[in-house]
Length: 169
Length: 322
Image 1 (cartoon, each protein chain N blue to C red):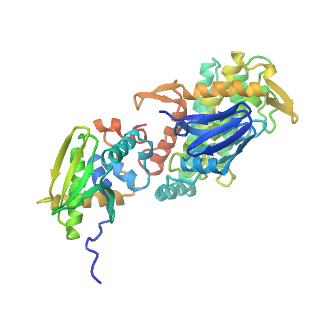
Image 2 (image 1 turned 30 degrees about the vertical axis):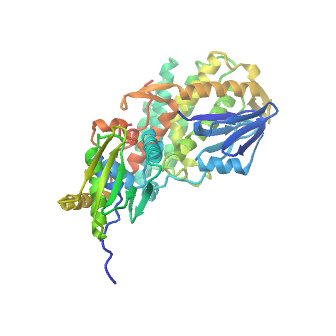
């Protein structure tokens, strides 16, 4: 039998994103201690995504990844909708991971990050980013498999985080 | 929109038509905004349709039932949606490993005692539990902890009694049925608090039946009993104290029944009104640096417990700073 094309890739896009937002949040999230259900911010994001891109083919599931929407053409386009740019690095890494994953499946793609509230778009290609993705995946694995969460570090984004009361209360 | 608890005191039917929840009685049919409901407390004779229950389950709304006397009967506890296998295992581990269990059991008693001391200071009675708390430290069994707790409580009620008006003294704590007015008031509020804590636990990944001070086989949501040790003095006792001292609750708001004393319907209304006011009042949280409601403090206590269980930060019970 042929090997599964992507060994140990059961990591979700959100997990890669959270690695760059906050390792503590990543640990809680991956251990089922989720807070998103309490967050109006998350609701708002979902609403924006549903309303603004109503005609797109949405919530495309490929293995453990869930892409906001996809457009097929000469090159497959992976589209992600985000609210604001404060955690831009996390968005970029999430997109890079999707491209990496698709490449492993033999699909060449590019990603487009949408910031509808800022009326901005950003195009991302994998080119040269493989190593960075692999490093990130390794770190995700290390944090997930740790028996306890990493100590939270106070950042300005803590204030708008759904986990704020858990970490700091 | 902040979600609020809904209390139903009158008789009627709770039903669902399309995607709206209604409460219907002889006064008519009233729509209820489901997105604004946090949980439901039912005191009246209420019929609930299965369609309404399906809807409440889907929205994760817990419904608590109280009997004719205002005591807790049980809850409609919808399917759990917040699950963490890892946390449940850790919760059980902290019960099974003696040292770990003792630590948490003592924390609940310690926190409760500190909050009782805080109340006595507010009520200007000179008493503290330093002796008992010293003994608590060296306790080696749950039964010993329970004994210390019982003695603290006895001393607390005796000191509190010094400040209570005649006719509203506790004298001796009695339950099922409560033997006098103050006991009836405290029991009624305790039932309500217990149900509220169940709602808060439901909204976290904690398993409500794995507890530390109380035994998990008490056929109750015993973790709520543990947490209530911290909040009974802070919430229940303060409300009860205020209600009788400000003469909001008077003799006529109680009645004799079942060889004991119970609240009248008007009495219940007055208590619930004060209770709701108290729980939605907020205090400045020193660590979060924002205002949080008294009810939210219970949720924060659950979070602190989670942090303890996952090994992030040792649990320190809430001691009222307000």
